Length: 234
Image (tube, rainbow, N blue to C red):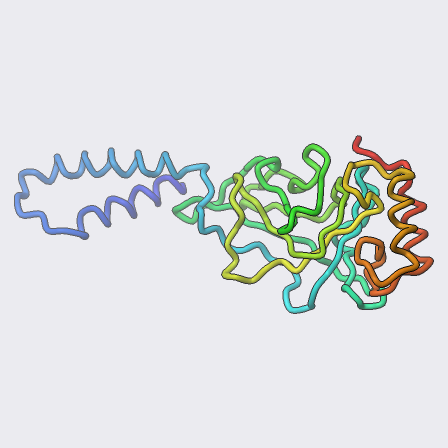
């Protein structure tokens, strides 16, 4: 049904975008228009529009942080925390609608072609560790709600990538930071990370050791570090 609507729209624009003076050639023009429009539609069909609608998430709340572990044992997006908010949790699920250039939903768009990155490159991930939860459904819908399989830390923002291109959300960033008991980002939580944690824990505030994202480094962070020791990519 989407293909027929796209073709009709394209043909309409073909004829009414100019003036046809020789009615004996209408048939030729019509056939040509159908061929050109169907070719254009075929190229757009199944390919996401570069101007995809911006994914939705709880904008306006402020900066959030998500605690990750390489084995996926970190926090789900529903338990993201407000940075400096005494550990207050917010549902930061990211939802996306995949459409083509004609505004038609693309079903079954591969989850592995949709993933998250940190803007400063501080977050590292296992293979497929930040991809969407599932292929797009019949309405082009997918999301990020499950815990990521990732390590490293990045106090910057988050980018939603589709087909290797960061979506342009009109200059509004996803204010989602990432941290992990895997401080050095080598995708395993071990004594190296314990050592790095110990170095900064008794010093000035350092986001890399604020696993609870409450603006202070305390026993809550020690607990998250202890729970993550041994975590590695599946």
